[in-house]
Image (cartoon, rainbow, N blue to C red):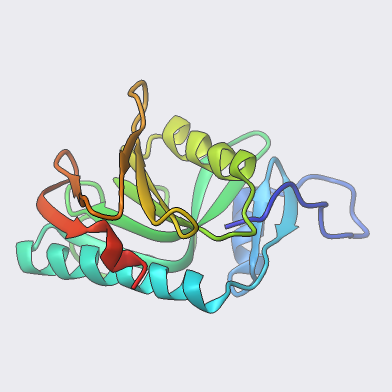
Length: 191
């Protein structure tokens, strides 16, 4: 996740770029497109990577066993706004087969939003930047956003027009509207 509001990468062109241009030019870079401007992302630390792996593992294992969808990782690009375009990189995202049918994944930026996005907040991430991403995902049409917070060892679940749910270290994370039957102790994401 971004550690806050970052300055755009300097460029010779002052024009905003589109999501399609961004995806073509920066598919291998640690950047996001925010309101038409490219912003660098910091390299994640080991704890962040561990929590991302655990989230992908538990959700992915569940999705495979239930044959319900697929999990994408590694800052998969998700377009969250148009005119000007914004493309965020999700730590982990889940697409049900209802939203993204079985078969080969297309190349490039998907025009389908995931059912769920999981972002891992590190100690260096500012809450205002985390909330901005949550709002962008929800406003774009992502059904559920989960923020795994390393410093407090909690999982916060956000849905449009609903109060945030906070699952603490001793709780089990459940997401019945997206993953019926899924239940994982929150502590497992941080071990």
